[in-house]
Image (cartoon, rainbow, N blue to C red; front, side, top):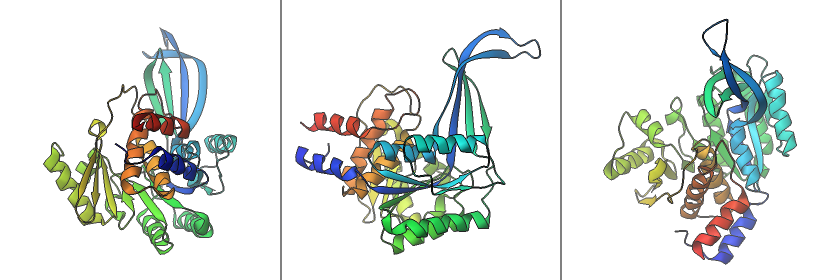
Length: 331
């Protein structure tokens, strides 16, 4: 349970508005083709999908930016797109919801990372990925660092959002963390396997169970395993806080004094877990920027992740929905 009063909760909500959160990482576009199947192709034994609707949505780090936007903050995504139509669509989506695209660099050597899903009769038929996952060039690294340095004074917090698509290189990770710490800015991390151990000395390191298992070559099956994994995260990466997400088992929060706090997931009807991790890191970071302590921030993030799991598809968390639900919980 969130340890607060309605008055403090109202003040915290107010503090969400206008917080400037930089999101550095892999920008993606999610594309959808919806239709029906009535026949098999005469050219090959494959179904023919007759498309009835097509649309595009934020994916990857841009979905994190969209979550920040819907939570009342000012997201500032910093990353790359290609010189292609998918990149134009992604920038157009940003413009439509007033997300600042000034941190987006066009890399002519790479395509915009795009995932296209073909869905028929509510069944996922196929996914088509366009991407290049090799590390970005040194010149692009320098451009990203330059953008961050230019804007660092007005940034309240930084999220490093890694999907192993090549933007977050070891050099860039180390430079961004150094800039954040020198400027005394909150910096949170949603990691993936490749650069897992590069994220040293951040404010909050937030891996999930599988990422932690893969990184350490362990299996996390019970409470002792969870505690040992948390201690390993603290020892190897030295974050101020390690936040281990455990799916339907909630969150395990660890501090440098080796203390552990568990935040259980409120029982919900889960419709779709897609995008829940993006919502958790977004809510956690803006909560900290708004002045919440780590326990309240983790509680809010866990609650927000549960709420979006009730929706079908990748849906951002709305600030009113989050705070209204929590208000009803603590009344």
